[in-house]
Length: 360
Image (cartoon, rainbow, N blue to C red; front, side, top):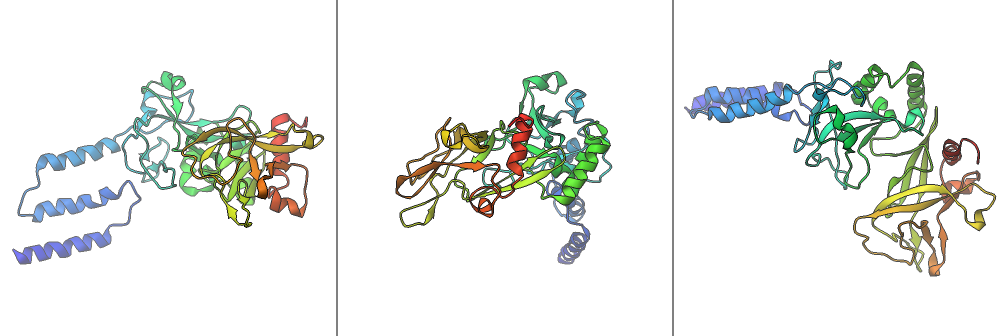
């Protein structure tokens, strides 16, 4: 018997060495041949119903219908997906995708760690193109619906991240990362990406620093976006018809205390938007300010008197209680601007032009 177990152990080790590493979500499949081998060597019989249950469960995932379109107007009941309580990266297949492994959706908790999608995460993947946005502002979204009927799409709501932002995958990120090219190809088949737009996307990805999945991408001053008030740097992207500018704002909400040490005045998160200032001190300029739309989470400790207030402009606290509005002159292009203001001189002017059509 010991000799038989020794042979079994050596055989399993050989199989383990030959099995290639698989991506997350398919790690279980690598052990199926080993399980079959164990059944042939084992002195005890593995319960048939348990093994069959495993195979039935996995077969059910494999037999899931492949998605036919990302166009919300052409959806079929078979395009409905239910990824509730699935693994961290549920696999999704597309009818026109010939890849061996399915594409895997990603979801992260408020700490940035991979996690399962929330309960009742069932609905349709679709491509969203903002009505007032440029073609480069398009993004993949996940609409949660009450049923698998395409007619339920209008009654559904977009899947949200833990901080309340819309779960999305920007167009530029879909092309930038080779793993997501299958989604990009599906968008081409659906007619969302023309040859001209493809050339633009290709050029922007080659010449610009492109956003990631969770990046803030703006095309209008009217957009509401998530913010972390404890951040020491805020990065966002501004897209135009054929451009993408990266903007870094250093210490946007931090102050100096009486000992001139940097400290975080606020530790919560929220949603804000940019807007043109109407304050008297900014008359005659194109000065952009930030307004708080909503606060979320525990406010935490605070070290000043300028706590962000819903509906009010964001302030920057200065030593000895002197405060000033967080603002950026869109037309000031000086070396000091890179330190005190925003890092790309063309970004905010582009954002204003996108919003008002060159009337400001």
